[in-house]
Length: 290
Image (cartoon, one colour):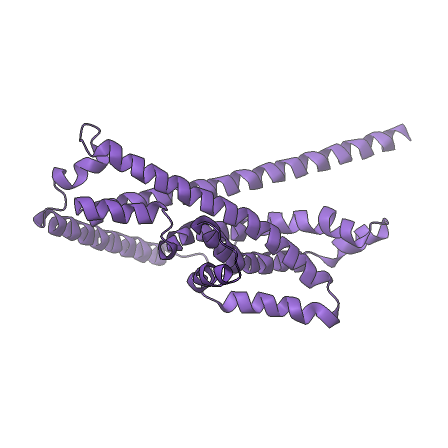
């Protein structure tokens, strides 16, 4: 028999209570959902007239609506992809700089990180769109959104990467220095790959945050998916149905990102295990040859 280190295994009475509590809570949730559906139906929100433009291809509005929605979704994905790439690159560089910096200029790196961490992302976007034009930097709304998202999320990713590097055993870097690797080689070849692998769930969570924060592009009149949904609502007067579809789109994309993280982690683990197996076979062969 195995026992848990953190808590004792529940006995028959505890299991029975847990089952009863789960059934009661599930029934309450179903009752709440049923009540909400009844109320929506009484207000006409479940009628075909409200949903047909979104789900019925024979409806005259279906094609133009999904063309508009598709354009907004494409703009959302473009802004999110650019912000993700720049945030990962700049965040990684900030993490490395903070770790290898000497005391006389480390305060500047820490100051930048702490300043941007404390600024709300909507303020960062608004600041980029108002300050940069005053210096003659006239850019499309897409780039102001990307700059604001990158400024905020890059420092968050920097802290995630830094935490991942510091969490590694010191023996990793000591062994690398012992075989003659330079400081840059130790960081790029030994520490960073392991830190990214360990921090992959946290990094994916932050990338999901970037995707959701693209909806803040409304303050710049950037035509992302939420902005396009507002246009649709103004014409069809179906906010519940339209926002429900937008929410489903975001959930599907974020779910895809999560699955991509799991797939990447498994591939990295398999590759690492394959390399270790190859090294063991080579060492075994060399020992047998001796």
